[in-house]
Image 1 (tube, helix red, strand yellow):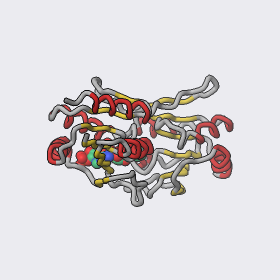
Image 2: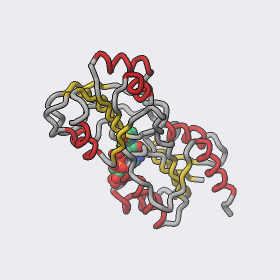
Image 3: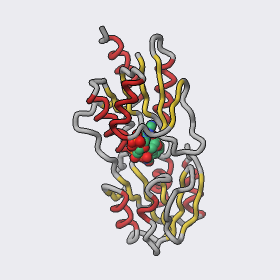
Image 4: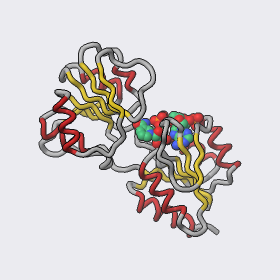
Length: 249
Ligand code: NAP
């Protein structure tokens, strides 16, 4: 089968590795091209946007794609919606590979908010030294906040306006709990802001915040289309792919 994997996540790279190794599969991974030095999946890779739903549909047809896996980050809502629309328009099977979100323990007191703007509105009243771990995109939502000081962590520098009082820390996970605890203590952090990305690569900050009694502002994921077929892990995605291959004439 000719498979398109929309990537940018560890799961996408793992699935590209597994699916490429199965006989009869021809896998192409697609990256948006946001990160300067991306971790590349095994096999064929294309980089850059498709040009919306129409561009993606044309690309699927031109490249004779038979199956699409949306293994993008849970917060990459536009490409997931575009994949759903484009795949439906040419009648291709589509699976969304989405790791589960994080869940709050009994002693945690997360403030769940629906989006970045709500997080910015919430954070100011909670503390004066904020650890902002939402990645490179979306930091602009906090740019108008003059009060709290921000430690902003991202892989690459954010574009656009930043809050006036901040320090930028460029780093790529995974991160260990001890290191996160040391980082938060040395910067006297008293609020953590994060997207509900899920997974174990960046969960250590939640453990460290819990241990230090630091409140967490947790930004909820954008919803997937109602009819979406979802696998929560790479193993289930591989099984879905095998079922697709088996059901072909
Ligand atoms: P987005 O808002 O959903 O997508 C914006 C546009 O970027 C899409 O309309 C599409 O452009 C292009 N695009 C996104 N993912 C693509 C892919 N895998 N291949 C080709 N084009 C893609 O996405 P985003 O939040 O900017 O994230 C961009 C990429 O970074 C995603 O692939 C995602 O997996 C990865 N990522 C995102 C986050 C995050 O927090 N958002 C975190 C880690 C990794 P066209 O309309 O021109 O096709």
